[in-house]
Length: 439
Image 1: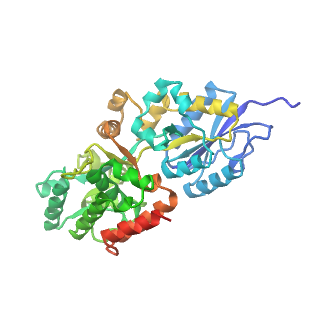
Image 2: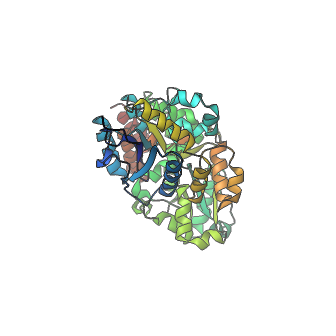
């Protein structure tokens, strides 16, 4: 018998998707992505949390020489297909990164993912350190199928302080405040809101927040559960009408439907003074500060939560966005592989070094008791704000296009784009989404 070589962990990563594979050198183990299985393969991608992952692998390998970790990077879309193919062929990774929500649930429903609840329950200190609102995105029927591995990404309203001061206004706290501010800004020839409408997904942030503020989290819970007629709920219809109201009032910069969200154009309108506000995820902070370091350093950048809606059921602390990316454990892994993977998730992720590296990269991890570290971090005012926003949220709703099944998420973006363009009415939007959900 050939002596068994030390097992190694192969991690495959992208900006939004990463896989981890345990394989035995010379033992015919899994080799996703065409690797040799010896743990030496590394496909680099300069996006996401690459620096944090690399540092984590280095630290883990030093302390666990019999289970080395190496990262392999892919672009997002090719990765998704590679993962589906590998899992379908029974040659999938031991751990894979995902957004939680509908995409992860499809693997859970197919019996391809391991329930991590027993491992978390066996170590309450581990489980209790993670924000429950974030863990919820990887929880189905009360069972946890993923562990968050990077930072929270709530959506906030950024604003140009100089432009608001010019019209004698403050950041809007209510929807009525926002409409009044739109009117003031337009009177001064200032575009109220920038948005990368050509990419469609920025539209969704408005619907998500308005539905929450009007109807509370329960409204989307019914949609996600597939409740018949849920898209015609009064809260959804009212939110769609409020979007139309904002568009008709000239709330968005001229030509917003042709602006890409992937090039930084929308954020540039904010820091160049062409628009006063933008609703964007926390990742927008990096885009703004990179595009114009002086704009932020000289105190011109402001941020606030989404406005409250009078008479609405949603709590003002509720937030939407990308809760985090997750590592999920394959049900196809061996007992030894699962044991090693869980050990890495518990001790290699969100340890002190891991958290420090995330903060250096501008990521705010969803773990408790970080206030002291945040005060010492760069841009402490911003990172502390994001941390408290996520920590104190009564509800942190995963972006709908990720929370829903992929096909329905695509239909949603298509019909919402039509609503913003004025091609369909709010009533038609609700009807078309009910029809799409019933497919």
